[in-house]
Amino acid sequence: MTPAARLQAATDILDRILSGTPAEQALTGWARSSRFAGAKDRAAIRDHVFDCLRCRRSFAHLGGSESGRGLVLGLLRAQGIDPEPLFTGQGYAPPPLTAKDMHQPANTMSDTTALDCPDWIADDLRASLGANFRAVLQALQKRAPVYLRVNLARTTRAQAARLLEHDAILTKPHALADTALEVVENARRVRQSDAYINGLVELQDAASQAVVNAVPLTAGARVLDYCAGGGGKSLAFAARGARVTAHDANPARMKDIPERAQRAGARIDMTQTPEGLFDIVVTDVPCSGSGSWRRAPAGKWSLDRTALESLLQVQAKILKQAAGHLKPGGVLCYMTCSLLDAENADQVTRFLTHAPQFSLLAQKQFTPLDGGDGFFLAVLQHSS
Image (cartoon, rainbow, N blue to C red; front, side):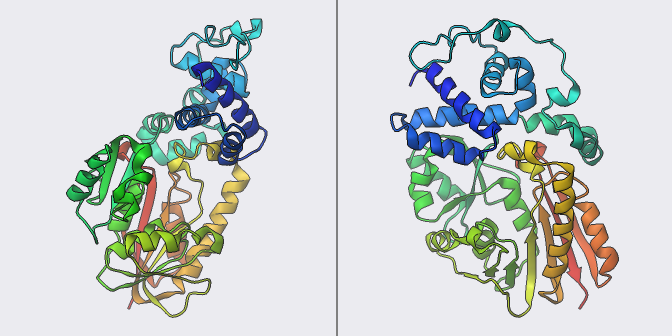
C-alpha cells in the first residue's frame, strides 16, 4: 500500500471508532476485509489510528473536524507534513482537499485541547498531579514504550537480553524494576522470539512490574490475585515463588492464563469462589485507566463523570470483599492504573476509616514521567 492509501484506511477505521465501534474491533474488521494489506501496512495503519486517538482533540482542531478525515489531516499538520500531495483521490488515496480542508484553523488552542484532556476531568487531574499536570498530559500524547518482564525463575535479565538480541530485538534494562527490559528496536517481533515462546519474557509494563516487586512477599506465600484479568501479575508473583490463585468477576478474562502459565513454567490455580484465607490478597481494581491512556486512548474519550462515580463504588466494594479473604496479619494490596486521587489515596483513606484493623504500610504513585504507565499501589497490613 502507498502512504496515501494507508492514510485513507486509517480514516475509514477512525470513522468506525468515532461511530462507536471499539478500536481493536474496528482494526480487526478492516484487516479481515483487506487481505491485500501486508504486515507493515497493518502496523503503519494501526500507528496512525492510535496516534489520532491519543491526540483526538488537538488533531480535530488542526484538521478542522472531529472525523476520520479531520483527524488524519490533523495528524499530518502536527507532523509538519503538507497533506495536499497525499490527498489526490488517485488510486486508494484520500479525496482531494476541499476549500474547507484548506482553511487553516486558528493557531491558538485552549490548554485542554492542546493537551488532549477532556474538560470535565481536567481539574481532577490538576489537583492529583500538581506541578506535573502538563508534563504528564504531554507524555500521554505519545506512544508508550514496550516493556518486557523477565521471568527470573528461569533466566536472568542479561541472559534474556542476549537471547532477544539473537532475534534482532534490542533491549535495555529499565530502572523501575529489576525484571524490566525496555524494547528499543523491533518490538513487533517479540511474540515470535524464542525468549517469548519459551516463557523467558512476558509483555508487561515497567510500572506494573514495579508494583508487584514492591509487595512484601516470602517464598511459598499464598497469594490471591482477586482481579486477575489476563494474569500478568499472577505470573509475576509466581515467578517470585508465590503460590498463586487467580480470580476474576468475569472468568472469561482469565482464558489466557493456562497457556501463559504453561509457557512460563508456572502453576496458577484459577477459581470463581476463593476458598480459605490467604497471606496476600491483591486487588488491581477496575478504574479510569487514566495512567494507561497512551496505550488505550479510546478510554480517555469514553469515560465521563457518571462512569467514574460508578467505578469508585465498584472499587470500594471490591476492596471490602477482598479483605474478607485475608489471614490475620496478612497483607492487602490495592492497585489501580489511575492518576486520580479519588481512585487512589482517597479510596484507601475511606477504607481505613471503616476498617481500623488495617494500617497503611506503604503507598506509591507512578506516572508516565517515571517511564512506565501511571500506576498506584497501597500496601495495607491486617493486625494479627
